[in-house]
Image 1 (cartoon, protein in one colour):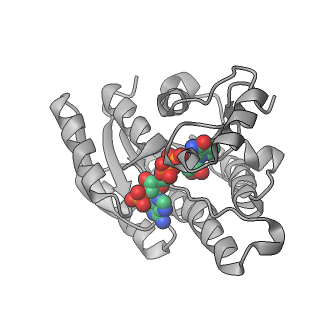
Image 2 (cartoon, helix red, strand yellow):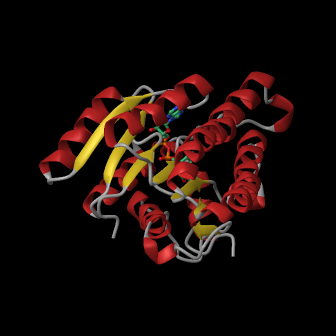
Length: 246
Ligand code: NAP
C-alpha cells in the first residue's frame, strides 16, 4: 500500500503517532519518526519496526521551533533522498476554562499544534514541489469542528489546522500534492488517559459507537489518505470519531 514511500511522522513516540508509524512500516513505507522528549519510547519503536523487517530512523525535533522543523525535513531528505508523505501528528493540550486560561497556555498550544504543523508543511512542501508529488496529512480533532468546554486554545489550534489544510491543498494541488486532515474524536492515549472517569463515562454515552477509539483506527484513515487509493482526494477532513460529531 505504501511500498517504498518515505514518510515523516511527527510526535511518533507515543499514542496515535506511534500507531501511524507502525502501520506505515507494515505497509512498506520507510518511516522517519520524530520525537521531542520520548527517547526510550522512540528507541523501542525503532527496534520493533526493524525487527519486523521495516526501515526507520528517528529524529529529535521540537516542531514548534521553525529551525528544528526545517532540520527534521532536511535530515529526512539527507537520509532517504525524498519525502513522499508528511503526517503532522504532534500535539498537546493545556485545558482550562476561558477565564482561567493563561496567555502562556494559549500560546503553547497554538505554537505546537498550529505553528508546528505550518512549519513542517512549509519545509516539506519545498521538497514535494521539486518532486511534483507528495501527500500531507494533518491531525486535527473533532473539537476543531464543534468546540469544547475548557479547550479554547486547543479548539482554535485544531480549527486553524483545518483552515490551513484547505488553503495549502488549494496552493499545492496544481503541483500534484494533496493535503488532507484527519479529525479524531476520543481515542485511548495518554492525552485522554488524564481525563476524569466521570467525564469519560459521559463522553462514551454521547458516542454513537459507545466506546473510545484506539490509535490504530486513526492510523487506518491516515494510511488510506497517504496511499495511491486517495490520489483524487484533497482538502478534506476525515472524521474518525465513532459518529460523535456527525
Ligand atoms: P499523546 O499520546 O499525548 O502524544 C503526543 C505526541 O506529540 C507525543 O509523541 C509527543 O512527543 C508529541 N509532541 C508534543 N509536543 C511536541 C513538539 N513540540 N514537537 C514534537 N513532538 C511533540 O497524544 P495523542 O493522543 O497520540 O495525540 C496525537 C495527535 O492526535 C495530537 O495532534 C492530538 O491533538 C490529536 N488528537 C488526539 C485525540 C485523542 O483523543 N487522543 C483526539 C483528537 C485529536 P514527546 O512524547 O516526545 O513529547
